[in-house]
Image 1 (cartoon, rainbow, N blue to C red):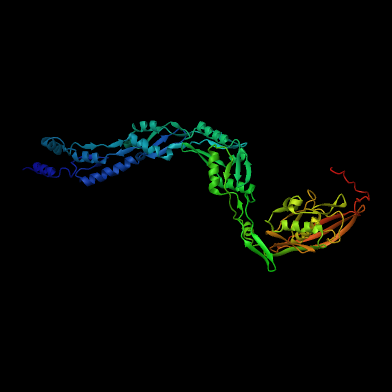
Image 2 (image 1 turned 180 degrees about the vertical axis):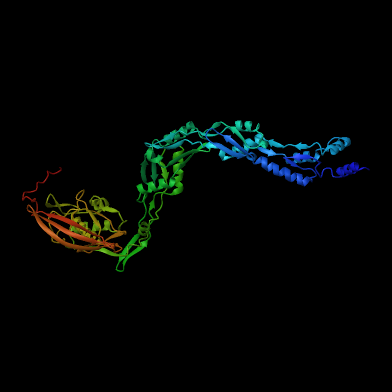
Length: 539
């Protein structure tokens, strides 16, 4: 066989593994290259083409992206197949002719760039750079107590359909390319109309406010106040509504700081050894149990009419828990005794009011009115007729003499450091009482009211003998009480007495207050020396 025939035989044995003579690809002569070498050159070319920059002019800005991120691809398999088959196609004579003329007639293989418009759309839709301005959802907020809507604002993005149509016409194998592109609107996911409907509904369900019942306590919250706890956020195709139940609970608890239902005080016994708790009390119920409150809020937000009932919860206030357990009733903090003759009718009344008041137990911050606690003094309650001052004169009336108990408890509260909120001295001075530091009581006035302004619960305990009445206040000692002195002056023919009391607290705070008493010159005579008129009977 001649030399040409031998070369042709070698070529046939290498078919599919080497590139024919004079086959060019991407400005590179691949003659005699193996398939792996050709594949490497094609891969390099694919990388060059797919990183070709494509400029997109949006009108507001110019975005530059590589072709590979815009839906372009490169068919490397087809390119390799064409490179390897060049001059090897046709019958044996055609292939032999191509082999013999190879050195004189080059074959150039072009690029195999692809473009998938659907893939380009999907890929570009996920590219945040295609969004030129994000849409702004409508807003729902309070204005003058009403929930109102601030309209949303449409965003802008590249017109992706037009962009992919234009890209389909671009030949990125020729190098950097530019396309001019328009924009399309991106509407908010929630329309202004949908937001307005939501706001109007929320205004409607809160229009009448809310009647809230917690235990036996009742309060009303106006609509504008309720709306302060509502948050309505349009977005993701819906208006998400929430109610700040924690903040609302805080508000209710501020409005209802005291126990909200009846509860049982502990029971005490006082003997020679001191004060003893013989039965624990019930922890005071306060506002509000969270699960019950949430159910009431859900009902209210669903448009249900009230009243909305909320269960109370046991207080967590250590002071109130101590009140229920009686643990702070440790010692005497105030005590006073007055004396009287034995066996008079008035003594029956003194003992009877002492029995009614014995065991009064006050929370810190709690106030007691003696008239309200005891009620009218009647024979049905065990009171009898005895001497009492009325219109400046001594008269017989049912309950007469209870003012001696009033003076006794007044002084016990005085030395216990309690606030003396309302009181009045006898209009005539009796030597069995401390001068200028005493109080009277009648129905309905004058009353005796005092307030537990201390940090601890106080227990009021009364005891008596046939000739004395004693009131003791038990608590935790923490206030030092001192009487500073008295000032006596004249107001006409009456004596005006001022007695100063000093209370010193653990934080070194000092409070000075003054007890006042006014005494007439004689029975039935006013401060001007004139007789006090007596109203006609039955008036």
